[in-house]
Image (cartoon, rainbow, N blue to C red; front, side):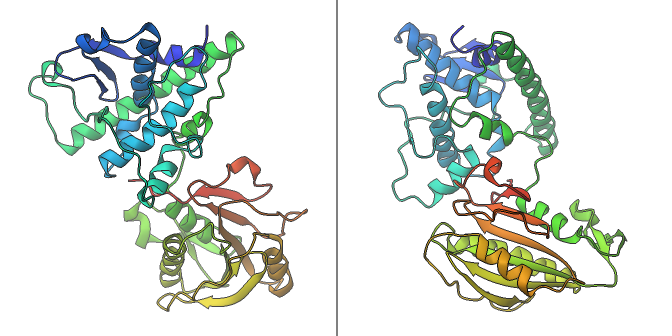
Length: 366
């Protein structure tokens, strides 16, 4: 009755008592709880511990980690989950619960990216996510082969996606849809169609209005079905927010991907702009040249870039715009006439605030 969405997810978790764990952990499907530890908790703490582990499983935190650092990933997951639990009436977070109120509304991938460059990384009391079941629950003859792990991950994703659908239906039926901090952003990271930002950028830039004929076979092996460029050139206007919200590492990551596109497609021409409250540029970005030194540091205003593009571009040339930013700034009153891709930094604004264009998050899938 207090939180039907979360309660329904809990019904999908298999809870297993075991002495093989010190407190409580999840392998992404089941929740393993030490009975002696559980007996020391209050009824409200029972709910908190159970929901904490269920959310790790239901939000696919075990499979989403990939090759990321285990401890930093666990801290990021705990920050997001504890923010959700704190918003549930009647729940009781322990005094040692990891909190970061400034970040708990973000997705785990975003929090992880931010924590990697945070000298004040919160301490992790215990790892509560495991890659396999404890010894007394392990299936005989288990295998660590990559194919087995991949098949298991696919099964987990399908299982919890079905659970999410049931939970949404139940929450809607009792008119208590839950809007916990971070939930919408977390569920968005589970969308099957979500593309890695690099793939999104490549597909976006080579599928512009132009005379494209067929697939470029050089990239089919990488899973990129990109149209082959024929004839006319395509100009890419790249704007990078230099108001202080985008760091040098992120600038170079985007510029390097654009340079890779320039090397692969000679018909693509790139003009680079650095933007804060003013627009600095254009600088010609080449496939193998140096990335120009960033300029700026003031407030953020998106309008000067789009005004410069509309003023300088040829009406007879196919063109697109790419803007790397956190999304905090002033948008034009009217959308530009060119297609726009917003590449949003970790911790940046939600996609719903962008009044036009496509959006993708600057987070690599691992």
